[in-house]
Length: 555
Image (cartoon, helix red, strand yellow):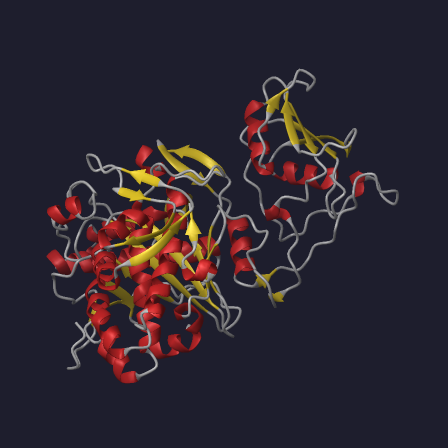
């Protein structure tokens, strides 16, 4: 579908409310897009970590906060930790509803959010998913954004399969199933809404941790009102853009963004427009719509953390308390979260030492009439593992084409840990000729990778001459196969009369050093130094929260 293209604070102690018995009236997850609630969640987490240094302030923050038992539901059969790091999932919903299921105020939605009518969208899609990895021994926090349209096997909280869906849909499917099941008997109104949402959270956690093959220790869910309230509390907020941009709000479409190149100082309403904009964004590198907006959200989180530090909010108990009420009102956290323990592992988070990246995908597709991102879970899992500092063992390098000690056809097979490619969309015979002298690159190795996708292996060997660029040509009847193969190399396939029918010819240029997802990883164990995401396949450039003086400049 088109829209899919477009991932209280009093000192008197009070019992923490669970999602099953919390009273009605709290505003719940909102609509709008990937970035909005992420920021609120991260600000909330920053406040959490800062408050953890003093128990009294910790209890002041958490007393009366809505909690969830979703983590407890998803521990069974979860991936095992490789060390004492902490993984935190940030969730934001695509629903213009309060926590009791009622609509957000229509006037607010239209006037402040430029988001159409509050009744236009009532679904429960998780349009915002960010997985934070906080290293056991300190150091840079790695944050990975998961595109909302990734087409995966979604799961319920108990691990049962929902089927193949966009990853954002797991929450709503689980909630709907719960509402119609026996467990919902006797529940009404706000109680039913809250219990159903907890099932949705559990489904999202289970789906994400299975998709990326990493355990999730804690979860935080925030709504659109939470973002707005926090942005209001800390405004003005500075962001930086590499270009002028405008996205008029018309009939519920567009965010109302109107910003200039360079530093922009935003109020709360403008902040919403900044993180919601997905129209009129194209960096020329394939990062448009949702993907460009994801980079906006990452940069905005960085700017808010910078603002909290700059204004002394993180270290000022009085200023922190001004934010506590907002956090308590609009944020749901899991009931196993010990903030004191978290604070000991999260100084990098509150200090702004965070790097954001966005998971890539294999290509676009259409499933059940909807536009989706096609993904290979094994590839995603390998990338996430490397970003988090858990590298696989290196695979033996294959000899380069033209080597005198072994013919290309005797090249070493790929490592068992190598990425499992997407299945061939159409049959074709593939010929591979290598003009690269890079270590580990050979026509035979590439041919094996293409055979693993389901193509038939043809001739292999050195390329004629010294071509610089990698090319993909095809004969009659092989266009679909050629397009898929060309996507692997980031080039465009062209038809050639010299290429036989039902054949595809891949010529690896001298600049080719291998497909990132297929490259052997560094030796096993945590990465000692450097950027773990360097040279890994990601959707667009990463956003370093410490760059540009704490205000990263994005498209």
